Length: 345
Ligand code: PHE
Image (cartoon, rainbow, N blue to C red; front, side, top):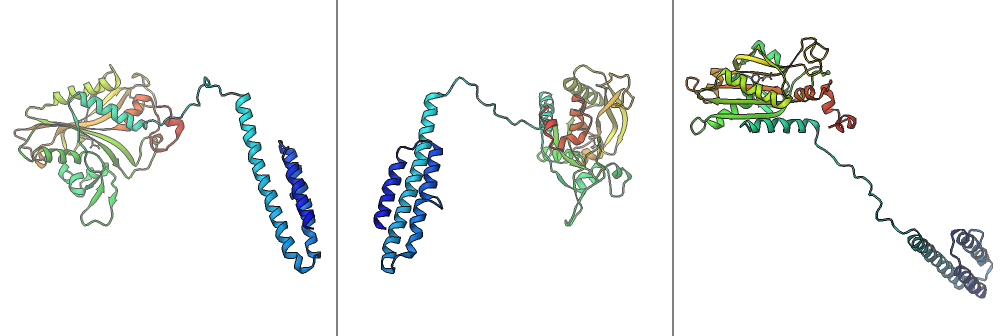
């Protein structure tokens, strides 16, 4: 039995040596290591041996099995290695092939649009000022002439923040930033103000093609010694020109509790050029922002004496600006994370 095992080992290792292809290797494995192979057959006979011999022969049988298995593994590796070197020699790499394109990310269209707006206002001398996304009721409403229960609150369907001592809201517009900016700039003696205040706003709305519950606004505020309604008109007209190119604008009477007088600004419809279409609801005009002269009480709330200072303010929906510029018909695309939309920008 011992001789048989040693012989088997010699024979198997000898047969393995010249093998260099997978099919032959598999035949070898079945023949020597398979369940019905030579080694199994030998091991089946162990039981018939006298007890004293069984341990010695069993041990040798196991060693033989291990030796054949590891020789097999070495051979598998060697065959792969040889195949690789052969392919490298016979199919040399073509280093002139163009590489696979790498998909690059890009800025979200809302971010690109905000940056465009910052650039335009920056060129016109306005600094970006960041204000809070979570506001007190006092800043979001009361200091803007909207006391509790005032009917104008209906214009800003509000999300309230639960569990706080005083009434805290997700800001419904960026206008409370006017108060914060003025307070900061009047802390050590009043100074002129020329800022824009961008940021996310929230309203408890039925979501539709025109309304989202979250959207960006960009607020603007200019306060100085002799700021007039003519400055408001001239500045906003120039913004529209830089954003949309040469294109008629009009100012339309409006009402906000924190500005007096107030005006909305429209641009000539970008789709129909004024002849009337569904986008402009057949008016020929598209509203792009609300604005007005800062109310004297709001100036006072910001630390400015309305007898010496005056100012104008405006607020625009940033997505709306982008929608009009690119002819996007549904505001829900902005936060729907659909690559087919995002990749167009
Ligand atoms: N805060 C107003 C709104 O959300 C817009 C606005 C800002 C109007 C500043 C006038 C002045 O509708």
